[in-house]
Image (tube, rainbow, N blue to C red; front, side, top):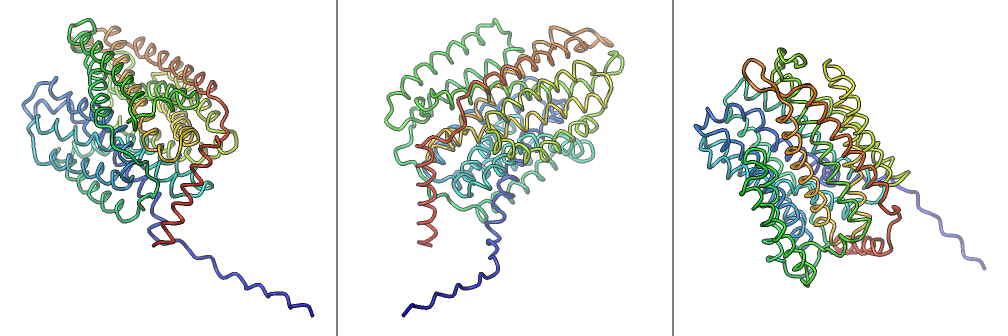
Length: 496
């Protein structure tokens, strides 16, 4: 006699994920935006800081340089630490250091304390690569692309929001108020991250490479210090040449040590693979091309009307001019994820670099009318969104799960080096093409157009580097690593 067929139970209503799980992406994205805001809030203060602190203009410039140097050094180091000791733990620590730095800035007007505090805030540069690694570990593939794209765009979104916010505070309140505000936001971010973000079970075992971290730190400090101070110290000065020579020697020794270390800070054999290495080259070139837009736009619209091209805008109005770029980056990050899903992140990166070049073509065509300046800057921001959103996806597809934070940290480092180089190159061009206006040297319009042309050419080079990256198919090793990631996460959930 046949057994009756089992009656299938009706499916109940879908159970919504816990609130903590639903808030993971917004909390991580807010951390990235806050990091970018922290990096830009000091910019409106720079002209007034010598008067407010009693320090020289050269000393005040270190409030920016210190953040750049510490961020470049700590990003790959904290990325590796996250892979080894827990990404949420290291992410929370980086946000805490950023918040402590903001509190110190709020409490003091001493330039030495401010520089040290800004160096502490540089630790937050690791927030984006650590967050992207967490998203890879915790999200299913169908949600991962859009979340990673949003996380990558937070750098531009925060920068566009931070400048007008800081300018408003500086104009209408005591400048310490700005740092008290960012301190409160930072403390909220630390608490929210600890509560809403799960600790990833994916770890890379081994002993931390202290020697490799010290060698990389020394080499990067020499390199970036020479790049950032070359304009003021003189590119042919003994100090700058000595820094570049020291950087070359130290980084060469570091490379040799990394190839022989059992658990290196940076897996150089992985970096030497075309898919990873060319992604890092594209990141450096894209960082260069993107950063020129922010640097030049702010100076151009604030130039006095007597220059013949300047608009004489205030710092608040300048920040508002850059605001559409931040909104555009927020709106276009989902589009980047869809293009990457349909065509692959390599094509998205190449398309983004090409759009950046088109934006600079608009800037060259017309940099006198405010509405054309805003359109050109927004086009560059759109291309930056596409490119920056594709870069971490390329890295995620090319490296094992246990090295995602450190690999993305190196990629962010390459962007930082590109931005530092862009700052030095743009400054050199504008200084060389300057003329007196009211007894003060002001860059000429021709100098700005040359800077746009240089950035556009670098963007085309980034496009070529992107097209040279091998196909986007996920390698077997990465697929196995992702299977291991999901297995470890499932076991952790069952144990809980």
